[in-house]
Image 1 (cartoon, rainbow, N blue to C red):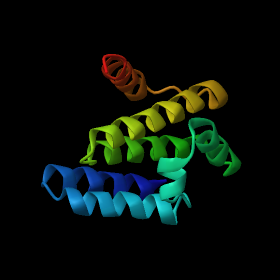
Image 2 (image 1 turned 90 degrees about the horizontal axis):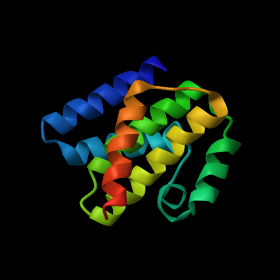
Image 3 (image 1 turned 90 degrees about the vertical axis):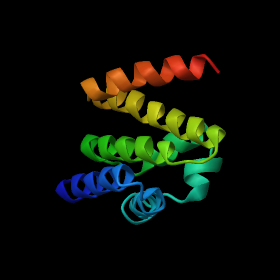
Length: 123
């Protein structure tokens, strides 16, 4: 967990330093290497298929939490608005999974979900 936290901090630092392409690469490497998720898993699977894939990995709540943070950051790095919205929806799915199945509640997630749901509903 500590390593994932350090990599997430690195991604955030890269974003602040306007090294967005590097931040994308680092995030994607985490998806592939740590979570074994590829483009198909992240982009083309339906919401239900995505959730089933995540559930099949039997990740600990802390690992799901970190995945949600990486997806949130990755969403903001997308050039295409539709892809940003797609990833934000994935983030919301993970937050709901954390709360409903793992009883893992975070004030960060609660406030972020409120912002994203309002923005998505205004589309």
